[in-house]
Length: 317
Ligand SMILES: NC(=O)c1ccc[n+]([C@@H]2O[C@H](COP(=O)([O-])OP(=O)(O)OC[C@H]3O[C@@H](n4cnc5c(N)ncnc54)[C@H](OP(=O)(O)O)[C@@H]3O)[C@@H](O)[C@H]2O)c1
Image (tube, rainbow, N blue to C red):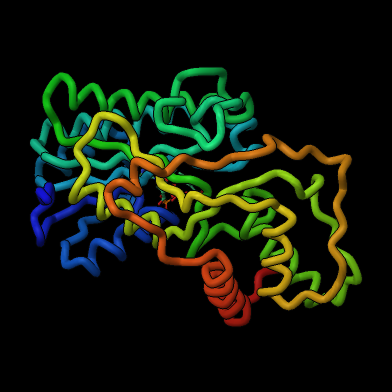
């Protein structure tokens, strides 16, 4: 099969300190590539001139665009201007800068949350732009959709080898455990841990527990990104997920067992559930021979162990 990346490539990972960027940087380094990074304090990727200058100066073989302004429902509702504009500006700087510097390969990270709110399940890549978006993150989703179209446009107009991936919900090392802004999985880990520590008889969770969601370890995503950089050169984005979902109730039971909480789980059904099901159709990625390696329970246990040892080293109030 044709390899689209040199075996010892120089790759700029934008957003290398984030959940996705750090996993991609670890993986590409392990594969023998040289990963180029720049802290935000030295290179604000919203600055198009500075980003173009950096890319001209370094001329990497590839760019992975994992830098973005991301956040939960509250942050999206409070700062829609920044979610729209920061992401548009980062994408304009990095993708246009890469093209101008003659970078032959670029991988842009989209997200499953930019598909239409009522997309048929499992969600295929061609569902993009076929219906109304989830209103709570519309500004963010529109910016990311613009990024997908930008990448496709560079392919169509200039023949650039630029591609996009659409990851499902991710978790992994360095996840955000701040309950005000975290995603469901780290939030469950923290809440069960604290309930066990405090000896609570019951932990009450939001909603009915019946919605179905898919989760992928970020090291599996990084593995898929490495494969896509090497092998995929298509116009359509590629969904990256494990291809299986579970109910929030099943997820909560798994986290409870991993953490060792013995109390009961209650469900506050007055709280909203969100969309009943969100699962990606991963047949395009599977046709490239890709399969995830990290089982959910094993991945949760590893993340919990890491977080717990960090807590013991430096307890958070
Ligand atoms: N996490 C998920 O479940 C998930 C799922 C699907 C898709 N994705 C996609 O994956 C991508 C990365 O997400 P993530 O979860 O890794 O986010 P993250 O942990 O918040 O990381 C984002 C990174 O972007 C950097 N960044 C933001 N604005 C910047 C700027 N102006 N200049 C330079 N760097 C900047 C941040 O730098 P600092 O470290 O300095 O803040 C951070 O390193 C996003 O496009 C997201 O849509 C994530």
